Image (cartoon, rainbow, N blue to C red; front, side, top):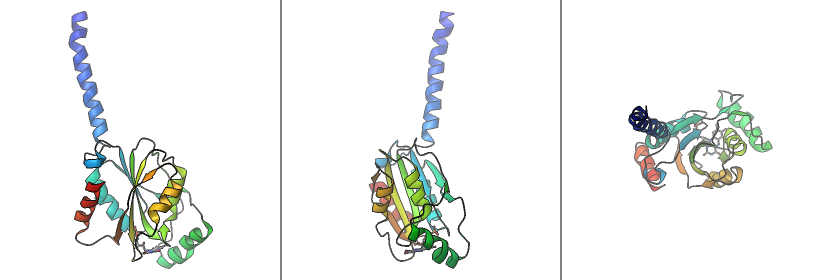
Length: 190
Ligand SMILES: Cc1cc2nc3c(=O)[nH]c(=O)nc-3n(C[C@H](O)[C@H](O)[C@H](O)COP(=O)(O)O)c2cc1C
């Protein structure tokens, strides 16, 4: 019996270690400063630009990806969204209900938003205000229509209490032909 146990023990240990490594590899990054950190790429996107950048970041850093969705979708019409719902939310400081996710198991959370009325989109405000980011690192990325990144990184820091917020990646629309290189340069400096 002892002999069988002695033979089986290393097998069980090796198998257990292998399972741990595989589970870990699926959400951990292998890139520079992100080495072995648990990563989530969370983003909101209305017309697809931020989604495009989020997917490129996810392809480069690995980890999980999550689309922040408002419970009540914005209208498809630009004017109704921009000058109606979104403007009203901005003016009244409304954080609309969203489908949320649990961020507790992640170390680094990339948070993507379009610039909406000089700051982040309201569903992203909800995401930052409703989760506990204490001790976590937030890496913002912003797509815009010509206005730039405003103070979105600082606005994020105000909502995500206790988080360290890094410098954002800011891009017009989906970025031009060089966007993949710009992204990898930025990611490698994190
Ligand atoms: C409601 C709304 C507000 C916007 N406000 C701004 C703004 O303040 N500054 C700016 O540069 N672009 C603004 N835009 C343009 C978007 O930031 C830009 O098109 C962005 O890339 C869209 O991202 P998405 O495709 O992921 O939704 C706004 C667009 C919408 C719909």
